[in-house]
Length: 162
Ligand code: FES
Image 1: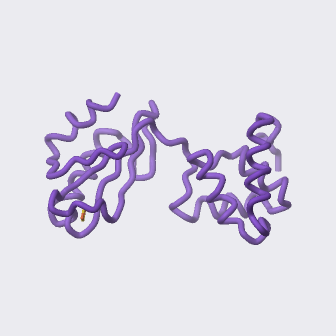
Image 2 (image 1 turned 90 degrees about the vertical axis):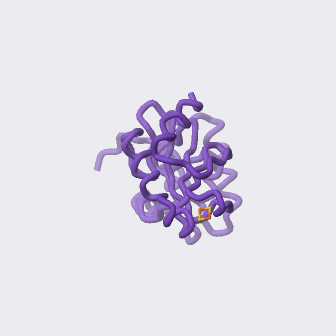
């Protein structure tokens, strides 16, 4: 297998940060999820070069790490957008049309859940609870809550986030 994605392009700083993460995990060979979680916490997503460096440095197979990263939805394999949109799909929001809101967002942004628009302006995720069921259906963008949202309002709301 050829290795086009070597870890050589990582900066000294990145390698140093990844070394710190490895050291912070008691037994990286067996705590691969924790290793990936901490890396994602630091960089917001799992970059291929980072996973290869982790694999090389811990003697864990890269395919193992990649397999875990693709299996668990908590891991992101693409860089996040500048603005994170969370759509609540809890029961309260679901019965008030949360699904329609989500579909409308997917249509406008031309992405699926857990994806980022090509211009990296928006990332889209669905969550189970946003804590304000009285305002259902609810979406949250960068921590700002929008309640009783209708599909007609979505485009206007998105325009507020450049
Ligand atoms: S169900 Fe969405 S905020 Fe409660």
